[in-house]
Length: 148
Image (tube, rainbow, N blue to C red):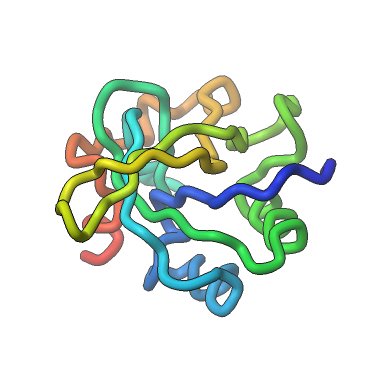
C-alpha cells in the first residue's frame, strides 16, 4: 500500500463505535469521540457475510467519522479487513475512496458541516450473488440492524 495523505475515516458498518470491529481495530486508536455523519448512497446488508455494503445512490446513509491516531499503521489493518489491496485492484471487495460527508452539528442539530473523508465502497463487480444475498436498508442505518 502506498502512503496516503491522512484524512478522517467514515464508517457505516461494523467499524462504528460500540460495534464488534470498532472494538478490535479502533478502540484506543482514534482521536476523541466519533462524530455522527451521513453520505449519499444506498446501503445493503450482506446476509451471508454479516456486514454492510455501501453503493452509490441518492439515499442518506448514516455513520460516524473519526480521526486515526497512527494513520498509516491503522489504515493498513483496515484495508486488510475491508479486502482492499490497492486502488482498483482486481480482487478488492471494497474500494477506499476520498469522498465528502455531511457532519452533524450538535448545536444546530443539523448535518450542516462538510468534510473530506476516506470511505470503503463496495465492489459489485466482485460479488456475483449480491442481488440474491443482500437486503436493501432504506433507513440507511446499519447500526440499528447490528444492535438487534
